Every structure is written in C-alpha cells, then in structure tokens.
Image (cartoon, rainbow, N blue to C red; front, side, top):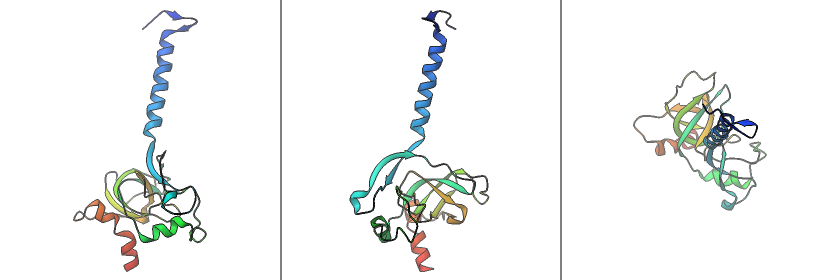
Length: 165
C-alpha cells in the first residue's frame, strides 16, 4: 500500500477512484447493444442503427440473445405508421417481431425455459425489439427451436406459421 500523500489525498484513494471510473465505463459499455431504431414513421430512411441500452426482463419476460430476425412484408407497413393507432405503437420503436436466438436471462416467473435454450419467438408488435442484439419476449410468445433447423430458418417461421394457422 502506498503511504504518501499527493496534496491532501492519499494516493491509494486516487487509484481506487480511477479504477472505479474505469469499471463504471466498462460496465456502461457492456450495457449497450446495436439496434435499428425509428423515431418517426416513414420509408426505409427512418431506420437508424444505434447503440441503445440492453433491455432488462420483467418478471414475466425473458431476454433472448438474437441470432436472427425475420423480415416480413408487413414490416414496411408498420414502419410507415399506417397501423400505429391500431397497435398502439409508441416512438421511438425498435422494429422486428420474429426472432430466434438463445435464452440469456429469465424473469422470476419464467418456468418453461432455462438459460441457454435455443428458441424462436413472435414478439408483440407494439413491443417490437427484434432488430437488435437482444430482445425481450413473454413466455407465451416463445417456443423451443427445433434442432433440425438453423436460427435463420427459425426466425422466418413465426408470422408465416401464424398466418397459415
């Protein structure tokens, strides 16, 4: 331990303070992700790639590390704002509602899935969030990904299956 002083402050406190600031910076950097965000309705030019906070699941949600996101014809209609009132969408909004990936964090009320499970999901449209590195989904929006298909194929299933059903 260093016992000398710099001015009135012990050097050890300055080192601890510097390390605390470094750890805070590292933690802050880890708490962001890349996502496509829209701040206004319109054409493809309203899609913005940004760093946003990694979402934290509520008790009835799970966080999924997104491996793939489905892109559907309806995505452009949603982005235009044509159904904003119908779906009660609020801006800013991260589009994407068909995803596949791995369960990364569980809310306390999640019982059918465990960390590391490969899944695919149909997230509610107002929630969105699929065009991001991490997304939240409720347990009833998620199903185990079949081992016989890859993540990209699994992300293409939810809306198409729902339409067929």
